[in-house]
Image 1 (tube, helix red, strand yellow):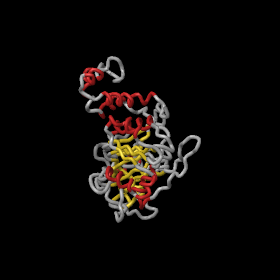
Image 2 (cartoon, one colour; image 1 turned 180 degrees about the horizontal axis):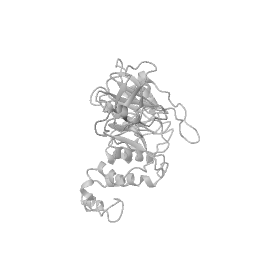
Image 3 (cartoon, one colour; image 1 turned 90 degrees about the vertical axis):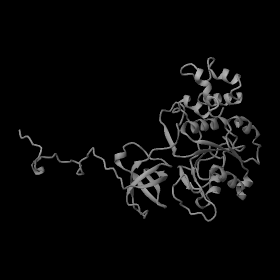
Image 4 (tube, helix red, strand yellow; image 1 turned 120 degrees about the vertical axis):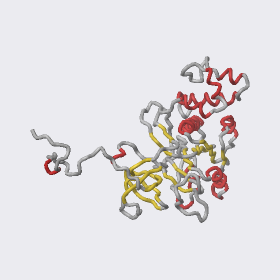
Length: 349
């Protein structure tokens, strides 16, 4: 048997032919240090539209990323044809570290986790005050997902011309969530968009809400140059609208005369709006309830006396004594426990 020394002529080494006819695989992956930076705007059947140097580029995920998927809002590194010309295709070779992550499951017993948006600063939860009726349990679930994923919540209430917002404001008052109340007339004349825009400036904001609440109508008012088809119909039997937004899409927050595609910099410019498909359920199977308490800094010190693995909703929970001693508002503890219990209840309850 012939043995090869340290310095051999490569022509003397036999190689096994590759049956597929392509290059043999190697564990050495290129670093792509010269890759361009971009932001994922939307994903459609394996093709990702990214913003690179002010132009849109269609790309696909490189094989070396394995099963790691890029989602809307991701900051990525791209190589290949970055001209953005028709029928060109770039490659995403790296997904940068994420600052926040909005996730959900289809149901509470579904182990498959769906990543909705990455790197958003806040979550705008859009709910109608009537037609269809508000669903507080769904709002609670969105709040839990926002707190868990590192997003600041914003409550946007639409159709105030059909019903007053008092009940919802009372329900969520103890959470100190910023909110905006809008009507159909205000959406038409632009007043509602102006008030909402004040909360979005310089931020990346993901919009979520169930069908028929006017979410896409509001997004169209905020981004007039990139209008998306609105629902326009609510089922009279179920009280739910039909899905019209089928994929998440990042759009630059615009006013008259704005450039349609600013640089993807979260810290400057007018900000970004991410429109997501309407949801009929928001599963929380992936949520660790112990992390929800971090969204209540006034209550968190009171958990030091809690027993191990305390659910914060049991007889031995130290928060009861903490609140009774006047360290925090009882309404805040009620709100915390309502959010923690939301996994145990149906969203329509």
